[in-house]
Structures are given as structure tokens and as C-alpha cells.
Image 1 (cartoon, rainbow, N blue to C red):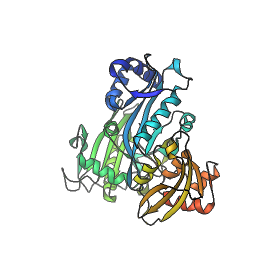
Image 2: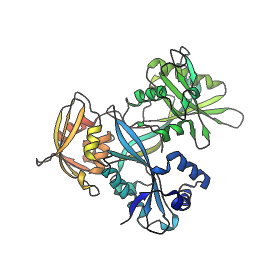
Image 3: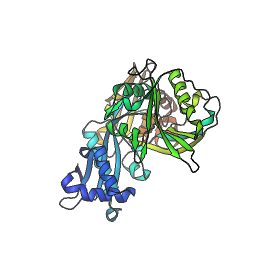
Image 4: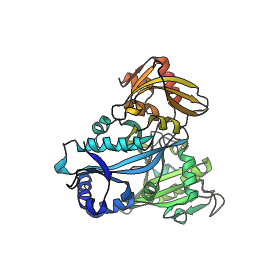
Amino acid sequence: MHSLRPFDAKRDTAAISRAITLAFAGTPDGVLGYFDLVGRENLRVLDEGPAAPTACLARIPMGHWFGGRVVPTIGIAAVAVAPEARGSGRAKSLMEEAVREAARDGTPLLSLFASTQALYRKVGFEQAGSKFETSMPLRQLHTGTRALSIEPVTALMHGNPNERLVRCYQRYASAFEGCLERGPFIWKRIQQNRDQTFHGFAVVPDGPGGDVEGYVFIGQVRRDGGRHDVVLSDLAFTTERAALRLLGLLSDYTTMGLTLSFIGGPCHPLVALLPQQWIEMQFKDYWMVRIADLGAAVNARGFASSIELDIVLDVSDDLVPANAGRWRLRVSGGLGSVARTDSPAVFHSDIRALAAIYTGFLSPKQAVLLGHARGDERAARALGGAFAGTAPWMVDHF
């Protein structure tokens, strides 16, 4: 059995840089830049003794918003195995140890975008949310206004994101299931992602230095002939008036701009303000979640304050035995908890299906339909009511 160990820059840089370069069609310089961005302390390699390592991953501290509360999460990225070592089980060993490390640390969740779902399902991950790209003609943005002040976001960012910007984003993200609580790694990618630069603008009704009610980061992709498309890396708003001001700002790009595109869920809130449905949506990704510590995950999540639930679950988890067994799940006053019990279970689920139920991606009844869980309809409906929310989605990719 392989173990996971921290990245050692002197010992590992050449081998791990090569593995990532060949896994993601990157460049050595680009990979070294990625090390700087993600932080070398967040890299892990599969310990192969005195031999050079052939497998690695990055652990990115973050959180997911569920039920109006942040659930601490480790984002998994840069999972790579050198070509000559593929097919040997190293990727599975790498992920098994990553899950065990998170469980030992009491981290509630792991989250990732899967290059291959089969691998991650073997270690307890399941589809838990979606990511779509919405695009539309810029000329249809005629519902916007110019009533509020706009401030360039460069005045708000100095290395780490300014608190005014973060507060605006958090108020926005807390209204939707699955959006990330961002760390420095994600915030930096909002302004600069690979070779694409995004220019930020904030809605500040009280003028420069005031509270931010909304913001947008805008990139431009030039077409032949001089016109361009507008691409957003991020946007957020906390009031309708701020959203309308952002629409007004974007509509001013129609002089040379043709289309507008941005990432979100199956129903982006900005689209709800448009008078027509002249949009195109393209599926981009399902992201996956793994429950590393069941008790911590339930304790951290928010629930509807109107829900009162007392139900016994039977959970199977071959990789993290501490999650397995019968649990009494209680939800009251917007908070949840689990405790060990010997009472008979009324709903049975493996840890994979429970991840999809936890995020609201699947209802318990749908999990039963798919053969991932079993239980009577009354129990499934009661459990589904506790975890119900908006369709989970997020803008960010990692």
C-alpha cells in the first residue's frame, strides 16, 4: 500500500512537474507557475520510497455553501500519474489516501472535477452539482440601467481580495447551493486565468470606497474583423438594482461586442431579469463530492429552519469505516447532527449516493430509483425535504 506525503521541492520538482505536464498537455514553466499559485504546501505525492515519485495531486482549501452555511472542503486538483506508471493502480491509491487524510483531519467534504468518473466513484465520490455556460447576444441587454456608480475593481484588489468584494460575493453565494467559499487560489484565477485577463467593475451606490452591491469581471475575445465577444469570469449582486446596473454596464459593450457568455447553473439569476429567453446553454461539467467526515458534514451544513427531522440511516463506506453504520440524523432549527444508534434504519445508502443527496443534486427518492439507496417512500420524502434546495452549481473551476 502506498502512502501520501507532502511535496518536497528539492526532491520532487522535476518528476512531479513532468507528470503534470504530460497529464494536462502543459509546459514545464506553466506547471511551476501553478505550483506558486496553488502553494507547494498543498501538493501531495505518492510515496514510492527512494524512487522518484510518479503520482501527485493538489489539495486546495475552500468551502461549499449549502443551506446558507459554508461547509469546509478540500478541492482536489492536478491529479496526475506519469505515463509509464499508468494502469498500475497508483491513481486509485493516490485518491484513497487523499480521502483518508481528509477524514483524519475532520474535513467534511472533498470536491473535484473528474477527468474520469469511474476512478473517483471507486473511492466514494459522486456527481453532486453542475456547471453550464450561458451565452446570448449582447444586443438583448436593454433592461439595464446606469443609475448607480461604477468603480474599477483594480482599486479593490491588492494581492488578496478586498473585504468589500468578498462580503458582496458571500452574500450572493450564500443564496445558492454549491457555490464556493473561495480561498486565494480561486480569487486569483478570477482576474487572471492562464493567458486571459479579466477587468473588474464594482457597483458602489454610495460612491468610491462604499459598500459593493455587485461586481463583474469582464474579458474580451477578439474576432476577425475587429469585433469581439465578452466573457465573464465572475459576477455577483446582492440587490436587483445592482444587477440592473451590471446589465447596463454590459450593454455598453454592444458598440463592438457581439455575444456575452458566463458560467453558472442550469438557471442563472442574471437570466431571470431578462425580458426574453434568447439564450443558449451548453453543459460544461458535473462536479463530484465525497463525504470525508459524515458527522462534520452534517454539523456544518445549513437546513431550512422549518424542517424537523428525526430519522435513522444506515450508511456503507468501505474506505472510511468511521462513516459506516447506523446513524440517527436530527434536524431542527436550521441545524443538523448525527449520533450513533442501535435503532433500526429506515433508509440505507452508500457514501456515494449520500453525497448526491447531501448537496441536493439527487433526491433520496431518485437515489432509490437509480439503485443507489433503498428505503420506504415516507422516509425518502422526509429525508429529501431536509436536503432540498436550489440545484447545486458553481462558477469556479479548479
